[in-house]
Image 1: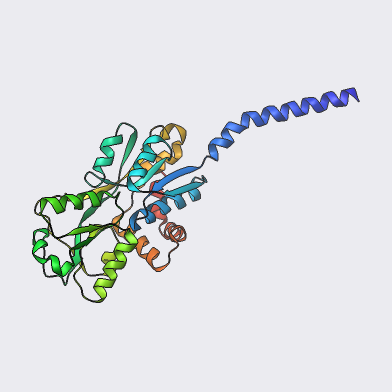
Image 2 (image 1 turned 90 degrees about the vertical axis):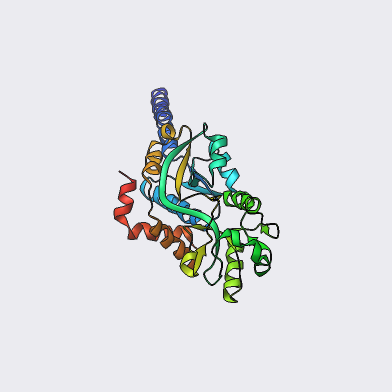
Length: 286
């Protein structure tokens, strides 16, 4: 009996030792990846695509966390989340980057050709921001905006000052409420001005145009970049490598956005896009 107990104790010791040695590796492999985003149509599409790609190819669980634009940048800088894939640079989110540039890592552009500005339906007969004030009544004195923390909102506030749009008010809301206001005005052929950006599904559904910006307040074309927390490369090298390689043509992003409009299941649509585009996905996992 004594020998049997001794052997049992030895076996238990070996098992405990083995589990102790394996635990760090198991924990590392199973660590949850946290991605922050703002609930804009483009950010929702891209972020869910990243989630689907990581979970399918790297087998790590991914939590996507909706926040405001300012909170998104702060969350990455503080290390509360691992990354974001919706940084509009150098203009739209430039103010946020300036505040935390020493606390984050810019992994480079995901796509180019991004643009922000004031958008109107093409049936509106003005073509420039400096023509807005003379037509304030036709727009009911409103520019329809999105959430107040968005970079495009602060730029539009600057537009109101620089173009002396005294008879206009910037209306806060969300991507959804802005699009609803656009759709209603478009249906009745009413004049409406919104804070718009490309890529966005609304350019595929409605016949729209950007108002010219002679003072260049909104800046030129931008890139959408991936921003990661400091230390991600060391902690999650495979995730870091994927995010570094993650590139998405604008046409593909707008395709996913259109899918999301038809079927509001962004993760399901992301998985379908991955299955339909294996050659593109391979470039993300070199």
